[in-house]
Image (cartoon, rainbow, N blue to C red; front, side, top):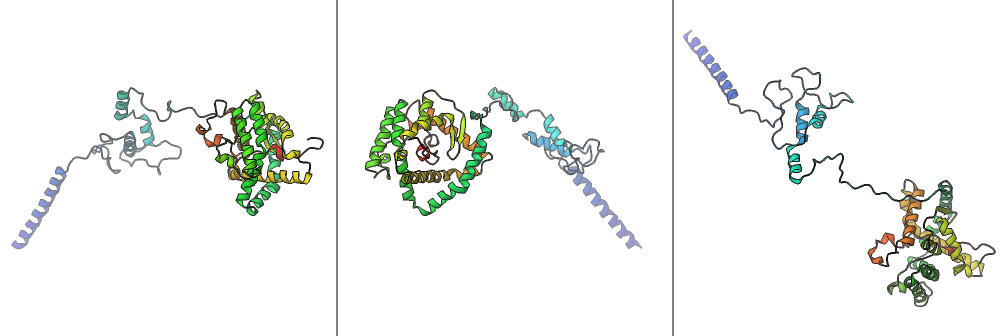
Length: 367
């Protein structure tokens, strides 16, 4: 009986000692870090703080406020509202806290040091105005769009298949010689128009190119003039009319011959009598050369086919690109001849030509 009482007393002593140790550990635990958010099951008044630590950002403060503040109408001690528990269309507590928070101390210090207002990322007055390109003068747009669809149908059915077959059958050096030949035929017309525009230097270069390529280049099949640094600048009577004062002209798309303006239609009429191809009396030779020139022009346009196919409004793309390029051809070089300082896409682009007057059929009764 005595042994049983002693064992019971020892067991009670051990239990009392364990309870006392637990109370000492609780009393010695360090206080919670003010920058640590309270757990989700912390009761109100337990000492957990929603104030962010020093140096934290406004986003951190908003996150802390949204993590610890109960939703409107929630019972004390309830878990905070989350993205899953917030009703659709309601504003989260974190967003409300971010909207109500004043600028951080770092933002205020930056504004005080540099004498600038506090940065507002929503409305930045230092951003430049958006670029605004001049609109095309296209009062005949409904007609031009119908003509554009007609030209595209002819292109898909005839012109593009011929150009594709031409590329597959004819070797590239031969195709390059054909392009050089037709480009050389247009140099006398370019020289005359450059002279009419008051550009004697450019007129001399065009005549020099014609002489060099016609002799050393074997009838223009080769281009030694470019190796001699003779610039290749195309001029026509439409450009001459623009330099003479007809600066603004409405856009017009011609059947089979594509983008033009009314001014350029009159320019074609002025250049036609000077076309070397149209002076040929042999109809078969003339028609063959004109057809070959049209195929050559369509082959060069294949470089921009993919860009046109991916456009949202293919008609507007073709119109605006042609008008901007034409604007530069007429007015872009009035300040001087420093072509080296200009970007390549503003110069004459041989990969994006227009149908020349040489390739237009001869109308009966006209030269």
